[in-house]
Image: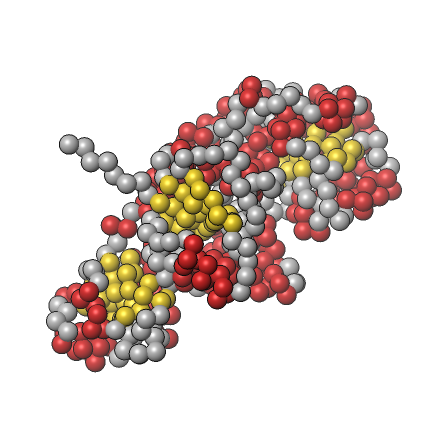
Length: 482
């Protein structure tokens, strides 16, 4: 008789979700619906108001708005339950709250993962002279020290993590890494609504066959990342050739610096070549990816952005930045044109080259989807998530000791064992929890199913003797080298 196995239960933490229209939100939506279609039961946890774009039998969602640490931990205990097979955290952006979450819920650290996308959680945290970002980067490094599984959308950000996240070189390289690209949307062309009157009006004023477009927030961070000022300078340099080709650039986005960009464009006499569009629906953006000449993504730093996914999976070539994460999935001369994002003359040459080019959209789409399409990416996700949710391959360990010595060996324990409890002789600590696992009295060790007891204390001999008196077999007592 076939025994139906219970599907794995995943707790999935998102930085942004529907109804937000950000790239993060779209990436998270596509990923989680693909995962749920594989049969996993998923609870989406958001720290902003969020909702499901469409109902799904395997997906539930809960929004918990930020509060104090103690209040959040109480809410986690009361509302999130237990028996989670894995915890997946998208980005390091909510690291402070995710540290509280990990400390509260009994989810084995071997079954936790963080996936890096880009931007705020990486370069901005690491380099911006800002008190808030400095504090959040400290929280991100704390979370990174706990979580043994680090995923990313590109190798670029795994390398960045190893270099910047405060771990020793050995610690950084002993993490378990996986690359999980962003997944294209499942919606078919024929299911999309008709273009809005707004986008039809915009395109009627331009030669859509030579329209290039860029997309991004126009906050200080967004303008810096998406490199809009360099783009405007490059358009000024290339303007004579772009006019001959009948080309125009749409820059889509809004924020505090939009007006400043418009003034810059006017001051360098390119207003007739640039059209600023404050906002378009996601559906209209998708229409642009199908009918425009090329997309522009000359970011100073970038991962596997949803903008690039939507362009390439619809056959739209991209003007893109060399030596960033983008360069891992776009091939110069075939699916895009590579430029130095720090050199406006390089960008200008790229603008002319990609505008002159005659692109085979079917070929671009095929080349991209062969490597990053839904089927191959979802298959990879299933294998990696199955591994994450399968605790049986890790020995169940009770860790004896919760003091300073533990900090020296916790990384090694996290990578190789499923911690089911901590033991400590301190009456003050007993009954509390650490990393979501209970702290118990040594006399209660026999009441918890375990394979090994790991010594995490410098008082090795006295603790070992204590364990032997409690009838713990000597071969099941180990101490890890620091």
